[in-house]
Length: 31
Image (cartoon, rainbow, N blue to C red):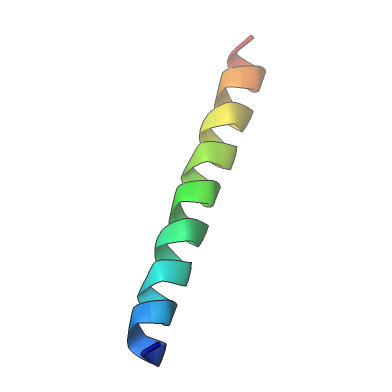
């Protein structure tokens, strides 16, 4: 597997997880 593809895939997963975590945190503080 290409390192670039793996790196972009890892970045996409990290970005998705970060957005989901920050979104859930904001939702919890809102409540």
